[in-house]
Length: 232
Image (cartoon, rainbow, N blue to C red; front, side, top):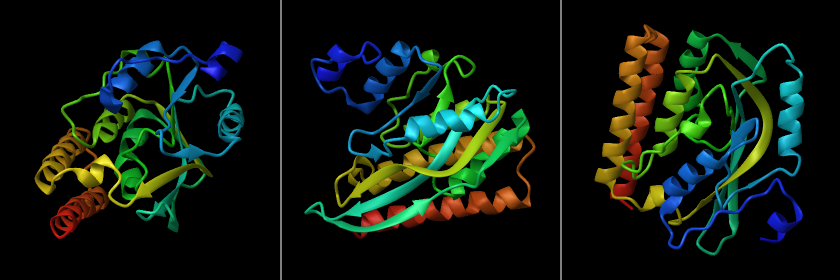
């Protein structure tokens, strides 16, 4: 409220009850009015110069109306006492991906790098990607980010990737919804996502040997995470 009063660019939206992240995002995207839109989870944090760094990167391509910017992430692992126990970086190389087909073809590669299936660490062009019309699916207990990104990447015409590490994703032991859901629900949601992307890649004619290998890795990862939840 303090910042909203001092800066007209900041707007605060209230809800009488906690309706969850999906509802909050749907409210946010409907109200968005800037040139670009990004997301930050409430228990994570970003570098102080993140937005300026992203703007500078976009400005390097004045002849391109950049649709999506994907930058790198550091995961920070905390124990039950909120003590930092380790970190791991997930990133991409600096590059510009041009063309509708190439952007679609980048999905599995980014997913393999463990940074595709999240809205954070990503910036979206509001008008060209019709962000104000997005509606997040509350039928996903987990995986709503990935489901939305599949739709968005299938429509984008270019993608700017940055090695810049601007997002700090906190993973707390037993503290997130994704680790709290049952193995059955987790697998059903993940299987729904994999079925979706498999069907898309076949329709797009992109399911070659390389992408088949990446898809197999995603499936094995899903099975491993289900087993991990079963054994606690």
